[in-house]
Image 1 (cartoon, helix red, strand yellow):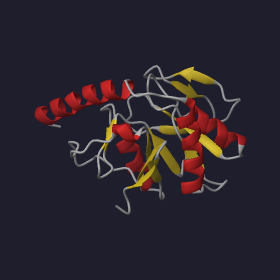
Image 2 (cartoon, one colour):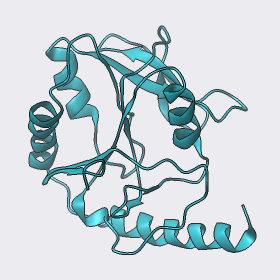
Image 3 (cartoon, one colour):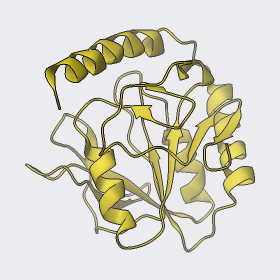
Image 4 (cartoon, one colour):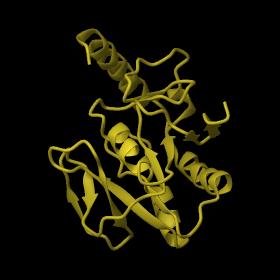
Length: 192
């Protein structure tokens, strides 16, 4: 990545993080996301659904994970592999032991499984489905690797207020989201 693009992305990240951290949160929006997810995506019980364990002010996904497990869905959480960009996904339920991982994020200790649906955190997203993450490239590398094996539904999760009206800077390896899930509904980038 050239220095100009890196500086531009870093600048956007700083502003997007500040904006996200100031957004109002209440439990109703997390409950809303559960029903929207189930109604729109209609996941099947045999599908593996991966979300993430939130860090800091990331969108709270534990309510969704909790409800999915209660309903009998197979859930997974990502785990950073040391010195690798590709995440592995570990089966998670209410009894799974958690340990602090590579970036201080709680990660499960359980069997590694392959997801069908990947729900990713973000700082911002644009109208074409490109997400602004933390700059490590884990999700882009992971989605590319997973899609070499099978079809994967790639969903961003957050608030509608995290949308930007301009085109986010992107590189050749950046993978756009298929959908954006917010408490206000779903944005379908595949159908425009």
